[in-house]
View 1 (cartoon, helix red, strand yellow):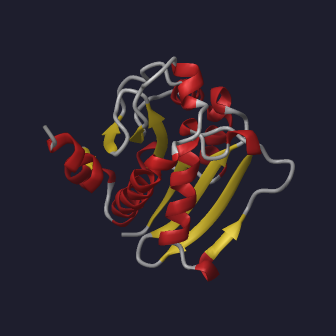
View 2 (view 1 turned 30 degrees about the vertical axis):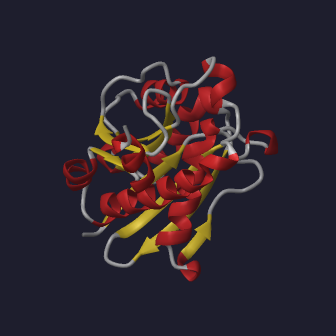
Length: 205
């Protein structure tokens, strides 16, 4: 099925924010490009003056897909998303936003269409700029163990690295389904999933 679509990972630019929980969306998009796009088929479209990193990937049998990381800081993510969607004429139903989620434990992923923002400033900005909340979202759990601001801007603990790796593998799998099939297919299959480690932990007494 040939489509043109946009995968957006949310996060903050700069080395001080690399590998922080709030940048889980950035990490997921990087992992997806690495796993889904043939090296010879990836093009960097953005320049130094752009407020986003944008890559184009021609995926065999699935059309042309764009992978973006806004560089406007989280609260203004919608500026980049609106610009890219308008310029490349991408329909809202073909937009997937990947972001961290405080209300889910690490290792728990949820795929959804529309809905509220639960105070996530990146999602709020995108909804405002697009004029609708009817885009797909992939929520990556980060849990909530401390005061929210410090928690989301903190880096994953060393002992969490295995689960983080599993999440990135699973998120790439979900993105592959979204790209290769449809949002509805991904919704029916991945509405709520857990990584193997998270599922095992939940079963322990």
